[in-house]
Image 1 (tube, rainbow, N blue to C red):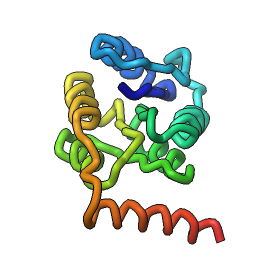
Image 2 (image 1 turned 90 degrees about the horizontal axis):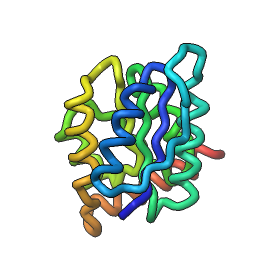
Image 3 (image 1 turned 180 degrees about the vertical axis):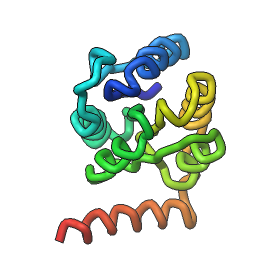
Image 4 (image 1 turned 90 degrees about the vertical axis):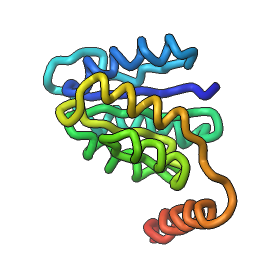
Length: 153
C-alpha cells in the first residue's frame, strides 16, 4: 500500500485533518506535510512543494493529496515538479479517470469548492483507480514527460 503525503494551507487545514484520520482507517500510512494550524497566514506553495517533492522522490510508492481554498494554486505548484502529475478534482469521475488515463500521482481539491463527504468520495475514487498501462494512455503520459523536458529549455 502506498504512503500518502498530505498537505494543506489554512483554508484546507480542517479537511486535511479529517482526511488523515479517514485514510488511516483505510490502512494507509499518512505523512502530514503541514500546515499544523488553521490560522490564516499559511502559504499554499510551501505545502505543495513539500508534498510534490516527496512524490517526486518516490513516485512508485507515494501519492500526494493537497487541499487549499480552491485547489488551483496547489495544483499549479505541484505540477512544476518533474514526474508529478497533479490533478485538481471536484468530482469522482475526474478523480478516477485522471488515475486511469493520466497516471496522476497527486490529488488536489478545494475546501471552499466541495464538502467533506464529497472530498472523501473523491479520495476513494482516486485511490481506488489504477493506471491503464500500455497503449495510448502510456504514450500520452510519456508525452507529458517530454513536455516537462521541453519546458526547461
